[in-house]
Image (cartoon, rainbow, N blue to C red; front, top):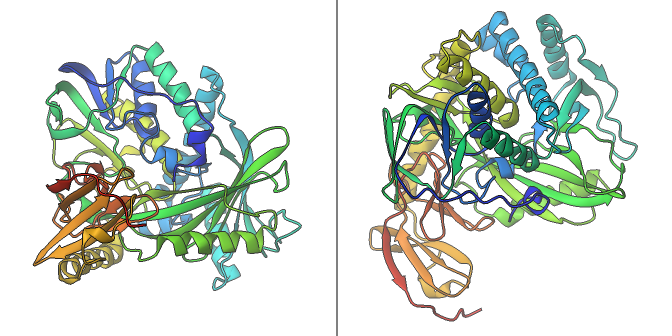
Length: 506
């Protein structure tokens, strides 16, 4: 279930880290946040070392995005103004606008061929929402200075009557992995080094250790791992959600280029991507749910495809399908800056659906902080901020976490025994009071691990769409073999047994 971006970008393998190293700045994570930060810092003369758990570029969430490059934020500016005040809302708008321009300037300066294009964005109402939602948002935007936003009778489709839209002119889109490839070349040109297959197993002020025993010494450490690793209690301030995308090849310009989304719950979002002189790719996303809390992944994708076919008649069949992880902050804004728990360590997380722009904002904040320069956005996004207006979301998400933690240990497994598994399938089984995460690989080899997440012990759930075990409490994800793929967990699931290859019954 790889995204389209992987099929359309030249694979870039990172050399494995095989020795102890030192650097001015260590960046953990070679996604868009880590590489943009590395670009800024290496260009300014810092000795930068980047490590990633994956062997290949884009192996984290950047390769799973739909790459909407926009200053429009998920929670809306009316909500941000209500929670943070008008001056802070103006700073949020300013930071995201500058982020889009910043990425465009890098692409131009470094001559990165990544299909960058300025496009308009259209938001349209979900079935249960009223026009007043857009009127309030438009009034807020105009008060913040975004006077270019306006209401339109409908999106520019002759096949889908969306009804009234809120138009945001001059947004952008690009190919995220082609952009990363260009960043890597620029970072190396600036003297930066990038290593893969370097899973971090221990982190402290000034030093990290990899699972293979290599040690890296650095004055400052930036943790750009989407969900921050080794941040005690920080996970309580955010929640992990899965989101899905499907894509279909269509005729060139059959759908006008642009960014589109509705206000339904869960919402849908769309864009096109040029493929060649005769065709585009229509990308449709949605179906969001809390990570590890979905009983039928195939139904989620089927529902998304049905919605796409109903509203976009040119969407004949799903040619590509993928899923990504979205980290939702409790109060609507990302957390970027010094770690609340470790001196000299910096984090960036809670991007919601604005990962592309927040990555650029984080890079600019980190550059200024590490050079001792004042950044007017730094306090706004500071991870140590306290916002009482986010208390409702905080309680809702953490009550859900407690529920999942308790119910997971009480529920029976998905199947009675591992013999029921076909090749490429996984499931949870129970043995007495213990829960096991079992997976039969494509060669018939059975892998069995404790189903207790190594973060806080919640029972993981099998994700059939991506063949992973996902934690329903805080979003940690593990491969079928129990290897940690994303945090906040930092250790693999505990191995319990591995049997020889057994022919599948199916």
